[in-house]
Length: 137
Image (cartoon, rainbow, N blue to C red; front, side, top):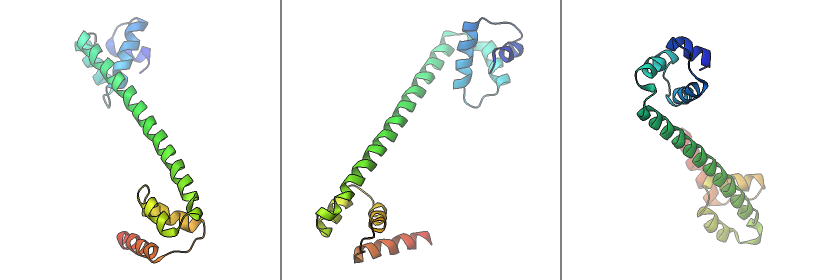
């Protein structure tokens, strides 16, 4: 919400610092309309409790964003490791690879690798494909 909107809804002018604090609270208020927020702000917005709650929400949002970024980074690292291990396929025996791969990736990803590298499918691969097709019906 812009400062002039906030002031119009309140009916008076506010200092820049007060507006910044109020706008932070408004951004943390979720789906609350500007009008509803300003009504509540007039009642309790300037209290220390409201500020403390808003600060907590801001901190939790920051932590959530950091956690999401960490998850994305870990997923990317995992994908890179999976690809590297799958690339070592030819240096191991097929059964040996299948046992190792099953421990860290999905049957779908194993099949994708086999198809992408034009490798021969084994009976287990056909069974996995049949199961996947059955689930789609």
